[in-house]
Length: 157
Image (tube, rainbow, N blue to C red):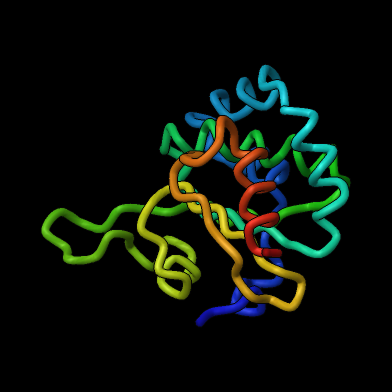
């Protein structure tokens, strides 16, 4: 099973990734980051938990679900004073391909971690073991930040 050490070391943080998105797509990411209000109860829990965990997000600049998720992670970075790893630029392959994503130009981690959707948020323990992932959007809770809390808490049981 792939580990956190399989992720490129020089990747951007979520906030830096938003700044680097092509201008045609950047506006939606910036608006979401400016307008979204984090669930502060979840943030308080994450302040206690995140010292033992790392987050990696793989996303496509053109993806609406990424436009909602990446800014939330960027806000969490600021609140937690902890950068997350953001790997953008996921691209679909040519029509007729059997692959879900074109690697390259998509990050190699798309294949390494078997990513099937954008965005994919992967939560790792500090030792590098994956403890869970969010594919596209939160499904067990009402928000991404609550979902991260749930994944971490469930991994400790």
